[in-house]
Length: 402
View 1 (cartoon, rainbow, N blue to C red):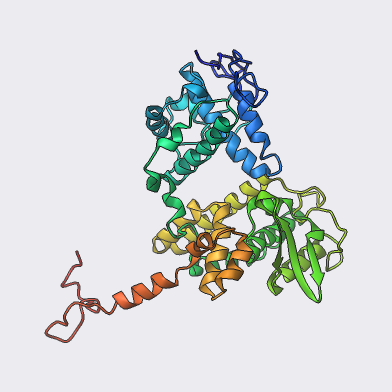
View 2 (cartoon, rainbow, N blue to C red):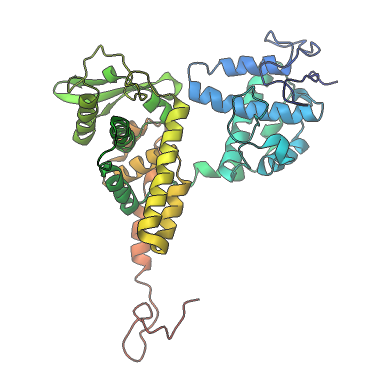
């Protein structure tokens, strides 16, 4: 019998959110945690990540989706079997009925809240399965479930392929250069102080993201005093994933952006070590920006930039416009690390900036071998024609490539 009983909230027919489900039949004989429901057991797993808010939100989202999916079938975590996982992955591809599962962002207790914004991409599905495998591994150790069905999914290449390929979600240098020049354009004459403030903040956000490669939660959490000078050099002190503390060199361009931003806020050019005020500010110039607001600001900027590029270049920039429309805030981190690699930054320093535990993770940003392969492959040509012209040089359209 399932441990999970049915429960409803204000959203008609929905079970309550993970962590708030009704206590189920105590089924934890032999368990090493004090929990009386699947939701409470999952809540204890999530508590292990309370020091990493971004990770906690991502893990909660995936666990909640699984709990809701199982609850629809009147089942609990202990009843999940290997054959169920293919059905669950298919559900992630196409959550149906859409009216019940898919909707725009809303507060968790809103009647319009839904667990999905849309179907999950292959990379997002792989990430979901990896997170849930970790959940079940913990639940097995806790004695809450008897086995981990995710361990039986042997096709790990399909699930973890996103960790093996090179990084593709970044802006190529010409597009980034256009974007930065667009961000540098001054607001129109006659606009108010608010527009000038937003213009300066936007430049700081994108410059910070490009020059120091932070995660969005690290940007949102940055404080003025995190920028510190030691022996004449400026460093950014950051607490990243897993509560790991790191110091990243601050290049001159970042220091110039910081100085300009502080002057706009009416502050001295350089921060003092004891300044605890947030780096990024709301329109009142005092309160900080949360992760969600910062995420929306960057996404909105990408969309505005795409519209501007489309207006200026038309069909000639169709591919670049599409890239900007697809871009998310994490693309900025990928762009920063990729461009540093292309500029010749050594792998060990690149790994330090990225704060990767493994060098093979950082190596995904190295595209030099692709470039050399492409250069050498270009020497492999078709024969010249009777006029001594190469196929690629034929501009008469007499021959069409296949």
